[in-house]
Image (cartoon, rainbow, N blue to C red; front, top):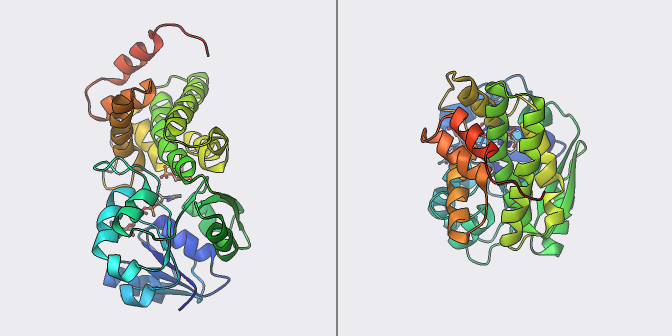
Length: 319
Ligand SMILES: NC(=O)C1=CN([C@@H]2O[C@H](COP(=O)(O)OP(=O)(O)OC[C@H]3O[C@@H](n4cnc5c(N)ncnc54)[C@H](OP(=O)(O)O)[C@@H]3O)[C@@H](O)[C@H]2O)C=CC1
Ligand SMILES: O=C(CO)COP(=O)(O)O
């Protein structure tokens, strides 16, 4: 057994399958009809329409047929714990690369720890960084971070998962990489709110900068290195997601700011993560005013105007 399998045929899993289709790669969808449809049409019309899958991408709904030595888990963050617990026997002994961005709401931990709790001793890694599925799927150049605490295993994964248009950088700072990816989604919601409410580009730049300060503060308190947050998985993804309406987190925030409807079935990782992180910040005594305010706006506990006024009237301080 060798090779790569991607579990989760959402937008990102499908895009990664496209990027790695210079070799045979397996894509697993939980829905039998959807798997058959993607396999026959060579297109995931539900999650990534308009992107063609080469014949080297094998699509299946049989999990047993999607087992390889390296497994990419491309599921929403809040579904990861249940999935790895349900399929622990099948996943044991494989290298597991989490591709999701977020903090588990119930457990207050990131994807690597979620996997390690279900599968103690597993080789786990994180694949994260600035990358819209639509861009990757179209073969546009993308650079991502591959984080693995075991540097030798990380180097092997870096070689194995790099592809012609997908350039992977490596780090052993798993906590920094996963917190960068998780927290930038919360700030992207905030950036969307700012733009949706018409507060302007300058306000967005201020918010991104102060949001980045919060990201570094929390990550350092969790043992991460500040430089990791300045890399692709933190700063890189923050810029991408706060400045593009291709981002679902940004679009969700925009709808909150503009007071318009938003499709609640859309995957918006920053919403649950805002609550998980606001709780962590409270417990650890870390000052995270933006994240805390975003969680309150999402819950409808404060309005966008109240949030703006409260943030602007905080005591003046050094930068
Ligand atoms: N889209 C993007 O541009 C990027 C996304 N990511 C990250 O990738 C992760 C996945 O996002 P994305 O692919 O976009 O999300 P999508 O909403 O496009 O797809 C989610 C996928 O997960 C499947 N799924 C949901 N719940 C379960 C479950 N319990 N068991 C098995 N499969 C399940 C869905 O299946 P079904 O269709 O049957 O509901 C669907 O295939 C997120 O953490 C996101 O932050 C990272 C970088 C870029
Ligand atoms: O993480 C992403 C880009 O790097 C995708 O962002 P959204 O989940 O907000 O669409």
